[in-house]
Length: 203
Image 1 (cartoon, rainbow, N blue to C red):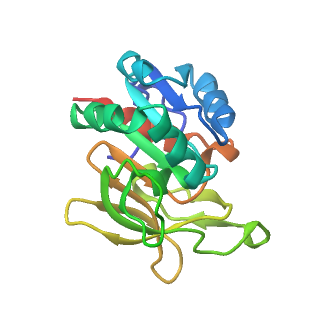
Image 2: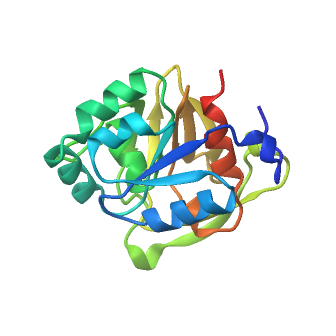
């Protein structure tokens, strides 16, 4: 269902967590604050029981995976996702929630039926921006920021493709209440992806 830009009615999640182990969690928390949603800096597995949705930010997927395993997050996160808690991975977060990441020996939450190619666009100097057609967000293109971005190379039968680059490369997808984006919506002032994610907890 399209989410109208600027529509406060689309924000249905009262308390959203951002995994604060590593990465740009502060930018997500700032976006939630602008939306009037209580944001929680999640550092302990027990906090997953205190939130309605979780964002896993961009950063270093290796570090996020190692710390998540070390602190006991992975099994708890799988349990909460199975209970229906919405989970959104951005950039490195998308890698962490993917079921398949070739050549990535570090721990994954393995929630979403997709295959992700790490650093598909090269190094930091190869970062770029692009306007994406995202029908679920409305007619206005979404200006996306890609930084050492992964790409989604395969999606399972239950996964909906939300956005592609020219040429068909998948950069955003959804599976029920799971959301993955290769880019960083938190680095823009376009809050439509955050609104879209927060609406996934309805029903």
